Length: 569
Image (cartoon, rainbow, N blue to C red; front, top):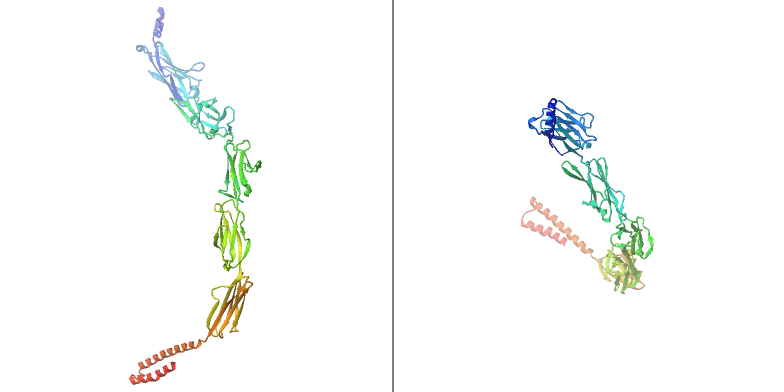
């Protein structure tokens, strides 16, 4: 500051002295360049001051606070006598000021966004000088968590240019937040066209992006970054997935059911699937008939029911709007009914040989087993019967199975009839018997043969006989006669048919064995009498009824006992 020249008259000495000191004295103020505060909190703006002329500190000075609007207005005035908040301002009722000899402090309550202004502190010490300083008040409001919304409709990869993918909004933030987009947690800002709209303290951003097929599995998110007092913070949104539409480039066709091999009569489900989105509608056909479309009620499924061997072949499917196709070979396995030769029944002579065959046409390897009366009698499609006997007669069943497909099986049968003359069942052609006269004897005769033999009996030596059993089946006849033995008897069982005769002979010798039985009974009775007599004699001897001398005993013995033994023997 250059020198100041002041001219004064005698009457203006006091005024000149005041101007002189005012010109050379001043106030030094210290204020923060800026003060940061959250929206709704209280802000303190300090103002420190000192006078350069420390020897002449003023006894009176004024403090005023101003805020920059258009124009600048005062909001507070204070001196030694009064403290006054100016009326009719945005700060009336919201501020108060505290002061001492070293400084003053302005406190603003319930800070609002429009409080972000410059506040001036002015100190006037009159002759001690004056000074002014300012502080910029910065207000911060952290935004709400960002809200992201993906495009609800599908986005095609064939779209030219960029497509809207998602929008992100951060509300109630100040200063204006920044929004950054991420794809799978990787910053895609360089691929983004951002459009931000500031409405009050809300920010919106739209992601526009060139969608590719890989984006079907991608997750998009947005991150809002914002200032707070002394720092920068970030908050990330939830992630969203978008629906990507892309053409079909690969088609696969497979058999959904049944599992394993297919046989005639099954219901077959063929499923077609492509890698396009949305899934296309498919057309099915057979390679043998490409110009014929097969009807499919489910779009991607072809039902064939019931299938036969004619349904075997190569099947194809393709989307309506594409030439890409999938194909598969379908083989329907079959097993025809078994054909047995000879057919139905076969008559063979006893002792002959016979070969029977069983064949069933199949698309798979078969296994054949022969059974008779539930027992296995052969394996393979050929059955050899050698030196036929009557036991050879019966039904032979061949069962044909497919080991690799057990559900396929069939069977056939042939009835074998062995013809021959009568043949006795058993090894004895002559039977000799001995039986007591008057007894009844059963004679059995069983004969097999084909045609079924007829039986007749010839009995000599007894007129008292009758047939008690007579039964027959297809090739065996059985007869039983009951004969009363009156004397030596001979019986003949005569069997005959068109192919021969057979005889079974019975010889019965009559015996008289009743006397021996009577003698045995008499002996038993004699022994019982002796035992009773012995007991009586012993009892009489004990009672003294019988003399004990030898002569007495001898007499008794020689008399009674002797006569008893003579009688018995």
